[in-house]
Every structure is written in C-alpha cells, then in structure tokens.
Length: 87
Image (cartoon, rainbow, N blue to C red; front, side):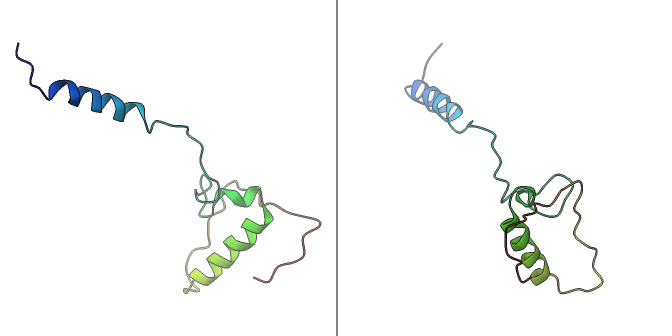
C-alpha cells in the first residue's frame, strides 16, 4: 500500500475540522422563532422584545387581508413597572 505525501496532512486537517465547530446548542431567543409561532422566542422573557416585535410586525404588514401572526403557545412577557410604549 502506497501512502501519498498528502495523506497524513489531509487526515489531520479533516480531524481538526471535525473537532471544531461542534459547539453548544444554545439558541438566541432574540433571533429564533418560538415553536409554532411567527414571532421570536424572546417575547416570552422581555417586554422590550414584545414591543419591538409588535413594531416590526406592524411596519412589515402592508396587506390588511393577510393572516394574523401565529402566536402558537407563546405567553407574552408583561411588566407592572414599564411605561406604556407607542406601537
């Protein structure tokens, strides 16, 4: 069996590439949609995200007859101390 001079470096490179990038599986709730919903998952944890998501949806909607955004089983965050926000 003949081994090419590039076999060892190629095997090492593949091993290094496979070892890196596997990382954790944490998902940023501010960029990922909530399961079964059209809104980001962060709306369940911060009221600021609820307001920004409502503003995004109202500015993006140009069709009055389109389907409403799906909330799925999302419970929107609430606050007793935050000031009301203009949407």
